[in-house]
Length: 328
Image 1 (spheres, rainbow, N blue to C red):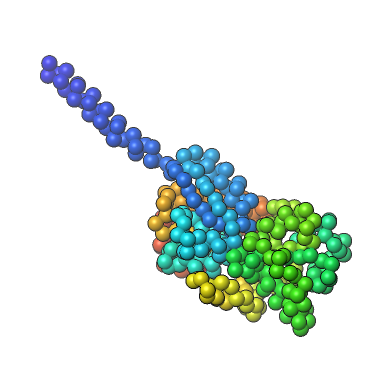
Image 2: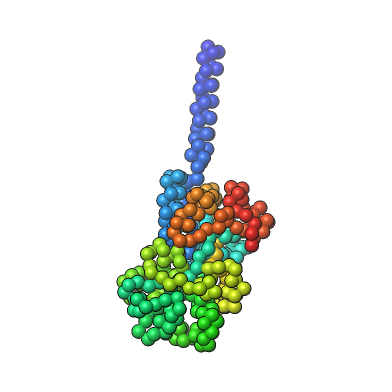
């Protein structure tokens, strides 16, 4: 009898332990909804990353919202929308609009450059070059545009390129002449919206990132490094271009100085799904994972990725610290 009683208690204990352990087994891998706000220019590579990540973590549903980077940041800071990860086409957007209140760190993960995109349907497509593009954009029958500087870094970077062009070509008044030939209706919320306008022939030329041009198979004019914002060695020159955009609070403005196109990513404080967010970032910052996808799509990544200070590196989740180096 006593032996049977002991066996019974062992059986009950085993059942209790299995019940207690079951939730832990379910929680062994990230699961649930993972929310990301990101720059529109990252849509194509992030779509591929999403498929790969969800295949590796089938319990996670990655939900992405693409927009201009400034707008993405304001979804967090002004609209208070729940979010786990925010990725910006300009790392300075995270520094200026999210740190320190909404984010603690900012990882720089890739670079880009601006190009002037067009198609075979574009007027003067057969004759435009890196030497005469600014003359083509001044022609009255040419329709060209860019994204909104207040919402999208590609927008204010487009204006910086035009400012730098005036300096590079030594043509006083070039910037004003170009802007005068670009109606306000040719400004769209984010740069990727201009792609469809080009493809349908409703726009002749649009400013885009090189990665977007590669991903969508668009013809494009490569500009000199002194203009294209793609070479960090020219940052002292790029800083001479300044654009005023909407500020941190409604009704305010702030000046943005030119700098090479560097992308940044962060995890929002009190992220609803921190475990899944860290898992995604570990995959994305892997040279054989997300960074390889970026490279294949015309967007050179930093390998390893970068943070500006040792203090910021130490603030990262342990799994991310091995993916970055301290380099300003």
